[in-house]
Image 1 (spheres, rainbow, N blue to C red):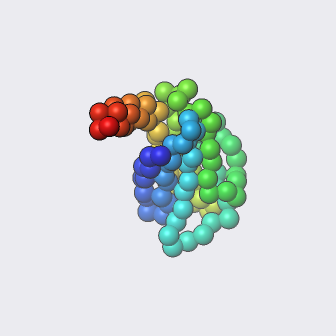
Image 2: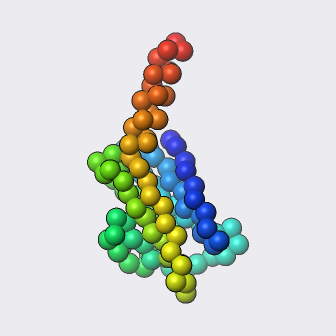
Image 3: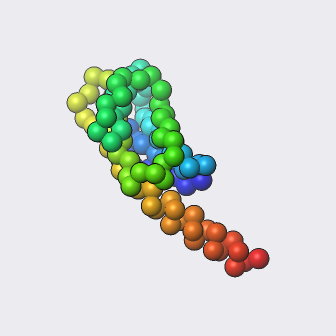
Length: 101
C-alpha cells in the first residue's frame, strides 16, 4: 500500500493503492464540512457526505484526476493520480523482495 498527499489551505487529499483499487480520501484538520462536491476525470459525481471515494481497477486508467470542493467554497482541491507509478513501484518492490532472499 502506497500513500501520497497533496495539501491546500483547507483540504488534504491522499491516496492509497490496494488490490488494484485506489482509495482517495480528504480531510481538514481544523474544520468539518458536511458535503463535498466530487469530480473524477471530469465527470461530476455530485455532492457527497463521505470523505473518501474508491476507484476500482485503477491500473486500467492512464491517470485519475480528482477534484474536491467543500461546501460554501469556490476553491477546488485537485490531485492527479498516475497508475503507472504504482506499477513501477510494485515492480521494484518485487525485484527487491526476491533479491534479498
